[in-house]
Length: 428
Image 1 (tube, rainbow, N blue to C red):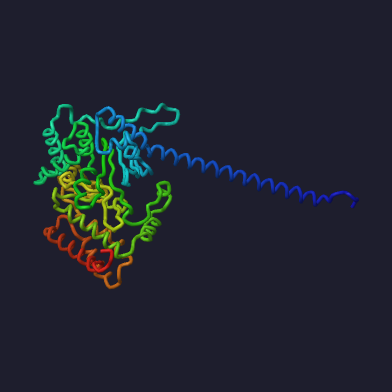
Image 2 (tube, rainbow, N blue to C red; image 1 turned 45 degrees about the horizontal axis):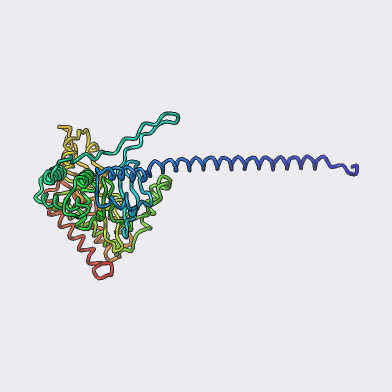
């Protein structure tokens, strides 16, 4: 071989090696570009969803505009619109027209809720349609006396709750809330805010249940924006995942994770007693009977003292309203007779109408919710009896002949069993 000449085989290997390096570089460059593209698209989609869901500034602007025009007033209006001492923090909204934020008002931490018009979707390249406006605060009208407003409130409550002996005292309680500045009279703007709040079932039901400590206390309102106490721990069990991750975690994994993130068993027992007491209080309660139509864990939370709170009162519906809705439903099978998530009646096939009587009472549904929660980690000496009572509770039927007596017996036995276990602990 001549001196200074490079062997042909080495040249071929060198060329092949360089070509392979170039191919690897192109491959990784392409993968990097693809990762950036997909990541950017995901971020864009998530950002678009966030901007559609979280519109608190629009809510505040709309409310304060009505306040400054003298159309509405309420206990939180001045702090929200003039002093800026009530402000929204973290967005918790899951629907564009139902804004939910954590918030602060002086020394109070709470949850702020506000209604907005719906977002109308449109395709790229098209002109967006105007958003549907939020309800106008047009009732009561100018010239309405306090007595006439009292009558309006009474009739509204009667339409929601049916004939109840204590409606007059409930009206007085609501008029006391309506007097936002506590000057002893309800002004027309305050009455308009109160009327707007009463159109939302969750506010009305929250007011009904807060005296018994089952729902967070109403702190203030302005128009149909209102703030309630913040419940420090929620959901009832499990881990509340950030909304971008919810759709990515399989249901089976989520259920397993739910059982990891729970308090100690005595504390779970105390929280469970709170749910049983809620069931007891809405079964032939002061203002009639109510049905719990969605017992999902995210609708409940608990305080530092492990006291249960119903954080979404829309999960509860007056029995009168439920029966009216069922009467209006046509059906072919029992599957057509469903209200909400957990309330169902049977179908009268001959009439092709849904019957009014719920198939399962509140207590049976509550025990189904508590079964895994209570049995996991239960003391060994208690577990067998607890399981027996929970299954007896879950077997309750809404149309049983002696349902009232059986309901009370099972409820009292279950509460007594739990109380015996925690009465001697600091968690009681």
